[in-house]
Image (cartoon, rainbow, N blue to C red):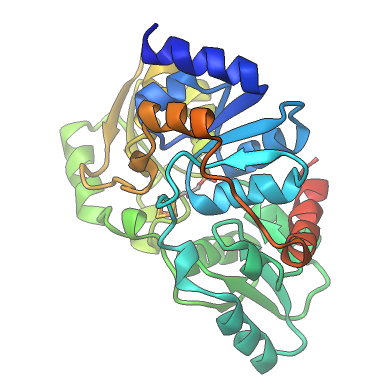
Length: 302
Ligand code: 13P
Ligand code: SF4
């Protein structure tokens, strides 16, 4: 049996489902039951009938799956796969910020730890952040938005609201420079540019479409353009190419790699299923409070 056959057999024996983020390496995306963005993966985690979720993504994503499915076993094949942006704020720091703005409502990006989510009123992903502000927080006089100040800036341009922000950012998206996009545009003048809202504002201004990774997959299917410059983590190019064989994709930067996402490989998925490792555990008291902010987001997303 080859490794893929072994994984599929063990997956059946364990009654497991494999969820993978759009930035995972091609072999992992190809073996997954579902590939998507943070919002899509949360929805899948909440509704799966499987007893075990093998989460191929970074730690906060697996933690979100566990919070939404507390009775299921959630495994992350590589426990070192964290998100540097999520690690830029902790619960103590958020509590201090809240104490400085006692009347403010708190919106947290899903790229945060469970302990941070437990301190928030509402969670959002890049796919629904604008909607959460417009609908979920329409009556809020002041809003704290953590940790990504670039996403906060993007949402501010869309909603006209200003936020109390935290200086967090994604090192992978910050690495994509406007000059990289301008260079690609010069080489491919017919191409349209898609960018993730985690990109800095100077880069976003060059984009024809700013959206989440799932939004990119949708936009690319619908656009008449045949060439697309992609300003996000390069792993998504696998899915874009697979779903759109008639279109040509150019990564905006060869340096747009999230090494944490790349830590998960087929061997580690097999070992995770063999050893039932590494199990995600979230203390109940934190999980209950974090679930409230995630569930409010999911209720608005329907
Ligand atoms: P998406 O929710 O758009 O997939 O983004 C997650 C992420 O970590 C982007 O860096
Ligand atoms: Fe975190 Fe950025 Fe990697 Fe997304 S791409 S998981 S925000 S470090």
